[in-house]
Image (cartoon, rainbow, N blue to C red):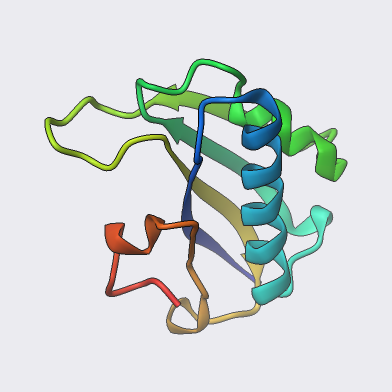
Length: 120
């Protein structure tokens, strides 16, 4: 079993706690489903949020998925002029039998423009 990193991102329509919860849960659920991951496969998850998001920690939203013993970390994305607003990015570290080329990276809600080479 290999350790792999999965990337993903989503955009929030507004900086709102419920919107953060909905977007993060949707993103992680899609990442886990498309890559066949269970909670026991997860090693850690790192979130970044753009500086315009203040309503909630993405990790707090992720806890809705029963990730009780999975280490979660939030950080602020660098503030680059002209960058896409209200974005949560995620980097999931997991054990999986998938080869690196088989990993499905997920970009939702307009975040597809961030990585057109990876977005589904």
